[in-house]
Image: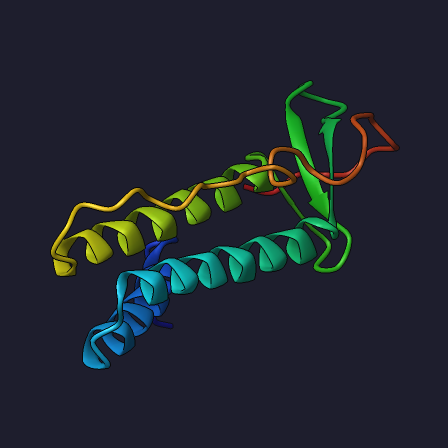
Length: 136
């Protein structure tokens, strides 16, 4: 079979390019850029909150003692904290949108605030419930 690998930020880049292109085509004002960035951040925070609701951990692997996280919806366990993935997603999108806004406006503008509250930790408290094998 054929295998494919995509960069974890490919989807974020494609979504941001689409948003930025639509803003540029219609000649969006600074206020419209700010609103679009706020909408994008609200959307990605909602997506992160929904996704994080399925994750629990960190747990301790019974054989190695390494920490892992488990997704009850997909029954997948991972070594890396899923909140780290969403933090990177949020920062990346925010940075792309703000940089693009700065490249099209005439006057330097203060950037909208970036709020990462709620994306910092997995949804369940730490603990080790039973033995489950973690996959990387």
